Length: 240
Image (cartoon, rainbow, N blue to C red; front, side, top):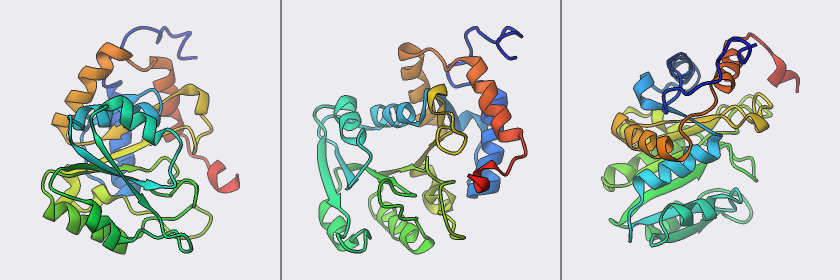
């Protein structure tokens, strides 16, 4: 229907305003994250949101820490974003799948630019609770140049009554958390290639500049489909 109405042309590289505004409402209601449309970028899938975030942050000789096991594209995306970055891997505890913060503290330094996390976690299914989120808060308070990238694409795929915590909901560190999400998993829109990132405005502006010259924009009719996915009242996720 959107295609027939002529929504087939270029749009703002950041994404259409209505969708970014709707995402702000969603973040406030579901994730307790305060945001404005200028802090949102619409991307071709959450994978591209992560790539743009990494390209906007990493410089030669910066350090990045990621948690293993991890989604298969994380390491290639890190390397493509900056081939002179120093990569450090933190293995989850083999039996409990918990983060060993004592080991993390040994890995982190004042050169650490990014800690990349993914909760609900692929592949273990671990959920980020408030106690763990508070530990990341302490780390970011100590290391002022470090950013936390939180990939939350699986936030709806929780099989109990627990709730995943978004680190950006913690006000003291919200300006140094980049929240990655999208529509692929919760709305079965994998082939539509639409995701988004929330971050402070100056980082989003960098991401928009990069996207403008790589991809121009996400197709507008796809963005309208995502907008309708948010606006439509449905219990399909619980059912499935």
